[in-house]
Length: 421
Image (cartoon, rainbow, N blue to C red; front, side, top):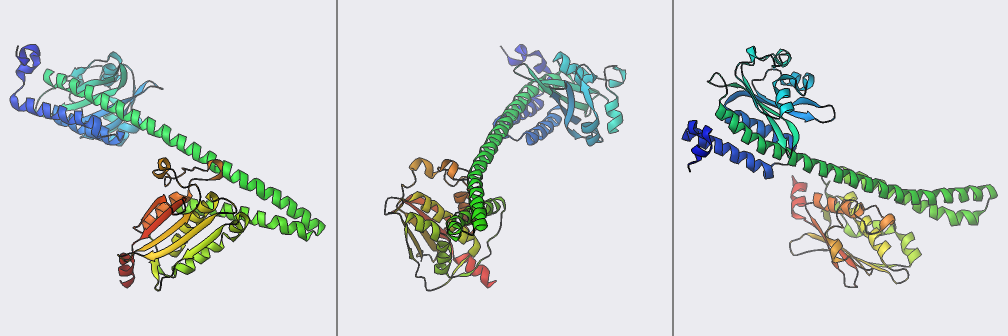
């Protein structure tokens, strides 16, 4: 059996029109997997609709399930005031040609709107557009009304043909599925984002609450010490209070560093001096846990880096190592050298438990932490971001003492060139 015998309306379709229709259907089918952004998808659907139906204009009305109304989402072509259409026109089911198509879930082909009482003339008045004829096709996916697709004013003909109607029905079936899929993806992404935000806020709140609780307790004891003029009590409480304020400051600095994109401000830097400054911030922690720290940075020339940024990286890596190493026998080794390409290689190694293979791919993600309520998950993410801003790289592997070894590589050739400009 020939195809045109099985599908009668195909008998009137020329080979050129058939090729145009098939090409359009293929492109819309491709949109199902290629386009996930709903706004972009709707714009593309409108472009294809206008082309395949050879219409002056087209519009897409989506269905608001809460209010049971249709509203203009996209309008293309010579539709007049498109913004007025979107902001002022909403149709109930059964109202206007689009409302009838939505209510009956069947296509409506109006050859002359001037003689059709169902036509919603207010839309033309609002948009200052003259509609002569239109074809409205409902968008339905798995028995759910998605909206209505309209093509308006057939180019070169008095009205849209039965062939146009059947083609647009096939077209709308694919378009409805594409819209439903894009909506589902957006809803899943929104849910995932909200869950991630909630988890992050909960983690940060719990972490800062623990610090603030310690600060409150310390401040009360300091008040007592001042009232009693008890110097011994002040000497015991002040270091705890100071550590808590430093921890709060570190959180704020990490959040600021992560939230802003910035270009490194390269300057000549004595890397040994920078490492010394960073380790000085950890004398209290190192003393309490009795951690041994060694530094190997005998470079005879300055390196070109953003000093505050690299200092922040060192603080975060030292914090991680300080938390990970055992008390009494903990070791942290810091080394700096230039490799064969002249790039700076900075390594921080410890003798803690190391980083499990399963965590290596995630530890640089923001808010991912293996410390539970004892960490924010920002430190390594900030470090990764700063090193990337230097066009460098950061990696983690097993260290010589069995713990973690973090390696930072920062190119030096480009900074030197930029300094000479």
